[in-house]
Image (cartoon, rainbow, N blue to C red):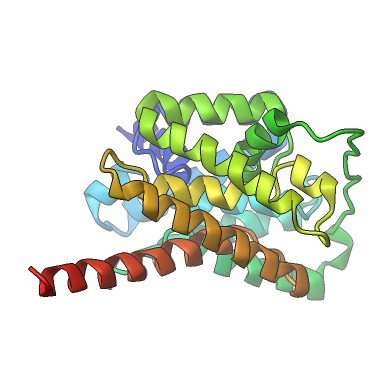
Length: 285
C-alpha cells in the first residue's frame, strides 16, 4: 500500500487517483532526467512518511493527496536550482514536509485549493534561495524552433506540467491520463491545442514559448478538473481554458514564476461561476 500511495501521488498531479498512471508518469520522468525523477520521488517519500508519522487522514494518505504537491515541489525546484547542491535537496525535502501540513490545513477547511500548497511553498523556497543561496540558480538555454508544430506544442503542454519541454514525455503523460480517464485525456489534449492556437494570436507572446507548451499546461490541468460525460461539462472546460490562458498572460508582467497558479485560479473561478449558475437554475425551477 505504501508503494501504491507513492505512485498515486504522481498520478494525482494530473488529478488521477491511479497507481499505474503514476507509474507511467514516474517512468517518463526517469526517461527524461533521473535527477528530476529522484527529486520528485524523494519529495513524495518524505511527504508520505510525514503523513504516516503524524497519523493524518489514512485514506487521503493512501490516495496520494498529501504527497502530490511535494512531487511538484521536487520537480519544480529543479527547473530553477542546480541539482548538484546539498542546499537544493534540503529545500526540496523541507518543502515536501511543509506541503503536507499546508495541504492538511486546506483539506480540513474543505477548500478546493488544488496545487496551491505547491505554489506557495515553491515561491517561498525560491525567495529564500535568492536571498541565501543565489549561486544555486541557473539560466537554461531555450530551445529554438524554425516552425510551429501544433502536435508538438500540444504534447509539450503535458510535459510542462512537470516543467519539462519534451515531446516523448508529453506523449507518455497523455497516455497515462488516457489510461485512467479517456474523457479527461481527450479534453486535456483539446485544451492544450486550443490554448496554443489562441496564444499564437497574441502579438506580444514569444512563439518559441508557445511551441514548448508554456501556454498549454495550465489549460491541461484545468480541463481535467472539469472533464465529464455531461454536455454542460464542455462549457465549464472551455471557461476554465480561457481563464487559465488569461491568468497565464498576467504573469508576463509579474516578477515571479506562474507555476500552476493559472490552473488553480482558473479552476476556482470556474467553480464559482458553475455554483452561481446552478443556484440560479434552481431558483427558476
